[in-house]
Image 1 (tube, rainbow, N blue to C red):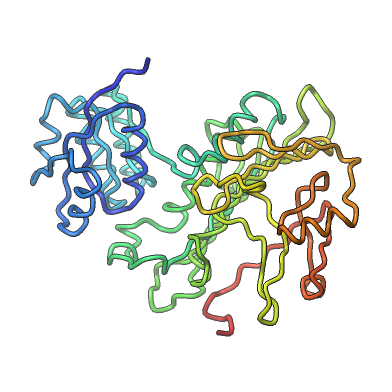
Image 2 (image 1 turned 45 degrees about the horizontal axis):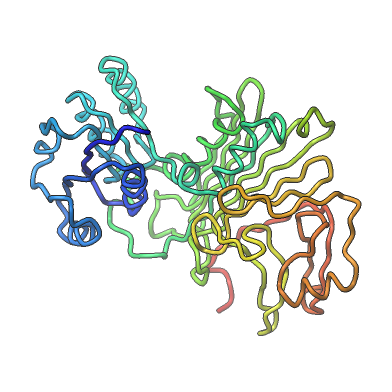
Length: 388
C-alpha cells in the first residue's frame, strides 16, 4: 500500500493546480494548507478544498515539519523559486509545467536537487493526467506496439477560453510559447521514445494573430532528435473562439515494428482535446468522423475525446479510457454500404476500416464518407481571418 502524507500548496495562478491536488488526494495524501496572495483565486480554491487552511506567508508551509510535499502552479517564472525553497527545507516539490523559464533557473534546480536529494517533479498533465496518453504509454512500454522512432506532437490552445491575467502576455513571467505549452510535447517525445536527452535542431516562434501583444507569440514549432528518434512539435494559441474545447491536441508515434517482432511501420495516435465528428457546410451539419472516444467511451478529459488508435501491421486497435480495448479487426475487413449508412446515421466510423477518415468539401456536402489510409492534412488558420 502506498505511503500517504500531508502536503501543501504554494501558488494557484494556473487552473492545473486542481488536477495536481486531485491527483495527490486520489493517492490518499492530505492537503493541509495553501498560500496565495490573490484573494479571488484563494476564495475559489478554498471553496473546493475547505480542509486546507489559507496561510498569509509561504514560510508557514516551508517551516511546517508536517508538510512533506509542496505543490505549486503559480506564475511560471516563480515556480522554480517555490521548488528551490521547498527542497532546501528538506521537502519534495511538484510544480506545474513549465517548471522553470530560464536556463539559470534550470541550472539552480539541478544543483539544489543534487545537493538535497529531494524529489523535484513537474506535473505534465497532458501525459500523466490523461487516461488516453497513459494508455498509449503503457502499450509502448509493454512492447505491444514496437520501438518508437518518431513523434508528432500538436498542442493548439484557445487564448479566449477565459480571461487572461497580465502575466500571461509577459514572456518574462509566463514563458515563451515553446517554453510553456510546448513543454508537454517535449516531455512526451522523451517519454515515448525512451530518450533521456535530445537536441533542438530548429525552432520558430511567431505572432500571427495578436500584433497588439507583441513580442508575445501565438505560434511555435520545433524539430528535435535524440540518438535514436526524431520529433516534430507544433503549438499555438489559434484555436477558434467557437471551439467548445481548448484545442484538438494530438500525439502521434511512428514505431519501427509491431508487437512480437512484426515487420513494417506501425502508428499510435492519441487525440486528447476534441473528437470532431461533424462540421457545418452551408448551414447544415455534416458528419465527417473522428478518432477518439468512439462507442460512447468518454475521453481522457471528459470532453468527448481522448481515445487511442493504434494501427499495427494493418490491424485496427482502439483503446478507450483507461486502456480498454474496444475493437481489434484485421485490414482485410471492409465496410459495405450498410456499414457506411449505419456509421453515418450514428456519426461513427464503421468498424474494420483504417483509423483515419479522409474527406473533401464536396463529399461532406453530399454527406458521403470517404475512407482509406489517407495522409492527414491539417490547416492551421487565424481565427480572425475567418468570415463571421
